[in-house]
Amino acid sequence: MNTNMQTDLMDENVSSLNEECGIFGIWGREDAAGLTYYGLHALQHRGQEGAGIVANNEGHLWQERGLGLVADVFRDPTKLEHLKGDAAIGHVRYATSGSHGIENIQPLMANFHDMQLALAHNGNLTNALTLRNELEEQGAIFQSSSDSEIILHLIRRSHAETFEGKLKEALNQLRGGFAFLLMTPNALYAMLDPHAFRPFVLGQMPNGSYVVTSETAALHVVGAKFIRDVQPGELIKINDDGLSISHYTDKTDVNIDVMEYVYFARPDSDIYGVNVHQARKKMGANLAKEQPVLNADIVVGVPNSSLSAASGYAEAAGLPNEMGLVKNQYIARTFIEASQEKRERAVRMKLSAVESVVKDKNVVLVDDSLVRGTTSMYIVRMLKEAGAKSVHVRIASPIFKYPAFYGIDVQTREELMGANHTLPEMTRLIEADSLAFLSTDGLVEAINLKMPDDRTGLTTAYFDGHYPSPIYDYSPELADAYRAGEVTFAPEPTSFYQDEMLVKQEEQLAEGVN
Image (cartoon, rainbow, N blue to C red; front, side, top):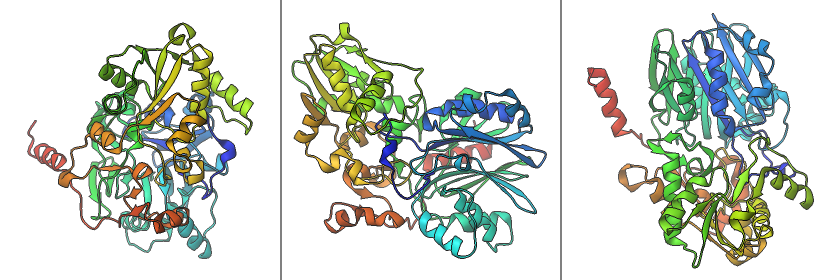
């Protein structure tokens, strides 16, 4: 859900990476808006700049949205009270750049003369600029700077006879990463891009109502049972008659964004049958085997997303896994100014070293990723100031060399330390005694998706330069790397990917077999 085509580095976050968005939708519960509120809480890690909910009250859609955390946006209880109805969709947002105004907070609403639409989007469209220019040339007027609004215009301009026909026609014009929730007065639709870049799951409440959301963790919070992952190219329709599944395209593949496993998703979530915590723990174990540290005393993980990897590293290396860093859980995301003093202070507000744990120790510092490097430098410095004898940084993912275009806010090579410095240079810049990374093979093996034809099922382009699709409007960013043979772009899918296990499960359900 990118808001502009350019990256504004003045709003660099303390975190090494920033999530895109989280979405949640439910149909068939009187307390739909309240459940959506709790679902968004479970997805708060995916976006902390804004939140919104749209409820469906007997065919009338009502919206409440605002800037800030979910609890801040809905602090006034009357906001939730206004959201009456037995269906709702919600959204938490992280803006990668551009306007941070209320107009970009989702779900987006469209009020036409004959119907209302509400849209929530997780991901990033790689042909958004081209589509927007074409639509504006045709007279479209945009109310936001979000690429998500494009699909609303495409739906309305379609000449297909049915609404679902219009929706499918619009979806087939989009490229890049998208998990959409679209609510009409009569139905809730869920749609996933043909590559399945972003996680998207279907669940069911005890009363039979359906939930669609970004992560299984949100299902657990509201008491819903996981049914299945939404498949690439699927169009799921949920209404009072139940659930129906069709496809808007039969040209699909599975290329899950590997950073969901490395960093974004909650450790208690499962993505395509793989638990995120277990995958991260295996990443740490593989890292210990590939990049051991001689004479190490303890392992310290960077809270919170690296704790699973640190556990795996310590177990594999036979070292104590110590809490050498403590995170202040009550500090909201801190956007910091372009001065070294203020950046370092922002890190210290979030993290503190435990002197009695790290003093006089050779520390293995495990982190999930190293993107811009500034945070790593401050943490290494913090540990040494607390008395650590040495700090050896081990990263539970490969060197981040290439930009991300499918739903992460790293869209230029200039921001990537790994793209602009050698390993010795990076080691010196972050002030570590040594620095090493997990290999791409080690990462893929740790996740271990069961895919046919020896495919990984993962997008690892950030590390190896092999993009699973063209990047369209972003092509100029990697033009030089493409000419040099550093990166490759696979064509869009030409065949239909079908999950064999899912097919068997659905056949059994159809036959009434438990």
